[in-house]
Image (cartoon, helix red, strand yellow):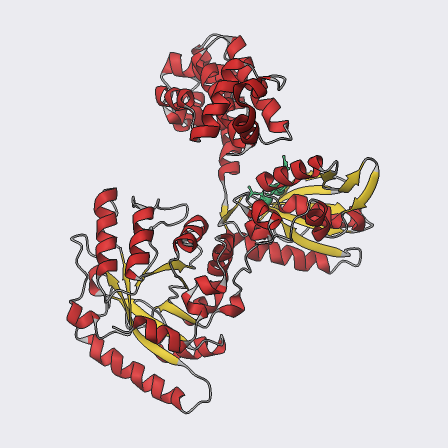
Length: 576
Ligand code: DGT
Ligand code: CA
Ligand code: CA
């Protein structure tokens, strides 16, 4: 539990108190504590464990009651009061607090007077001028609220990694053309390869920042210039917010580190710096007034005794501890992959033939692909029915024979994406499944089953010796469909027991398993298959990098991933 997380709990308590109209003294106490904690350089959890309430109370701004809660949070990871308060209030109501220009008092009033509990209701009431009836509210307030809602929605607009990355790369390419640009990198969540991106951050080294600002704000596709300063500007380009910052060469490493984030990671680094008497910020590393480093990103880590940490790990999920002990994983890279264990062809809903997919795989340097066309239960046009299976197998053999004479080892694996049906059975009998080289089991129907049922459904499939891999194990579609309810601990344990591989589906709208679950799989000793689920040859080459990025965020090394192994290994693994 981070200081920032504890501060957030206290801020939320204060928020709820405000909406409830509790006494101002109490509210101020929580706010003050949150503020103190946010800027504290020591780890609260450590203090709580070492000195308990007594030592915590020595921190200015922290009284007895709050000290007790900190101890509770440090011990249990949770705060009972916070949980109870949250239950008292419609959760949507607290979401209104995230709207700019809308404060807790305002929310309390619209809730009491008009029964408003969510953004839609607030917006409707403001548009219909219903708020003017509330004492102290007028047309101006309504106008402000509507403006705030509009801003809130634009802030909410995170975009998929696969949308932001190409735009960011093209901005970088454009700006690189300027003579005055000495260095340029993508920073922020995009460099960390998060699955969704709030805004694009770009960092430039230049001695003539104003020329960079001019070029940036007049790029093709710029829809709005939000801010244009001497060293920092902000634009909206193709519907995405983008920031650029210009620094001097001596600050480049420190700035790259700072603006790559994450914020939580940065806070930890800054705290470590303080312990060593250093000030670390976006301008450099300082001891007193003396600059002792900051030109290279490595300087930042070295100054606090840490090994270099790849951007994908910088989320304060254990990387600081690992870097301290020199056990940062040697993360998987695109070039480690030797095959793709989940692609589609025109035998089901894919667009390209087996041969076309095979050629594309060879061009990627692969040793194998598993053509995992859909079984019929999904109901897609042209599912792989029992009649087509032997015909498709013949074609696979034909294609494989074509490559046999080549020096390069390559094989199309006869595979299927077989539905795990809601009654726990597989879409094909064991007799049929047994004949495939690789069986990928997947849930495509009845996502609404309860947690227990869904977990048993998937575990049952894992226990079937013919099922080798579970595709997109949580079924989520980013920004479209939540994952179904499933007990991930049980899935991991069952995968380990049965030797079933879990897929990391590289499709940018899926990225399923996600980063956190990948790390969990690694800890359980469960192998991951980074697959594309490609529906044509171009996709196979294009989306794999998002899978690899997610795997890296999940701490995966080559040995954690089955398709870094060669054909021989894979054939042995799937042998029944
Ligand atoms: P995003 O844009 O929401 O996907 O996420 P980021 O991580 O790109 O965040 P952004 O664009 O707000 O800021 C870029 C980086 O700048 C962030 O990762 C860390 C750094 N940063 C921003 N605000 C703060 C802050 O208040 N404290 C610290 N220590 N770092 C910050
Ligand atoms: Ca950003
Ligand atoms: Ca930003």
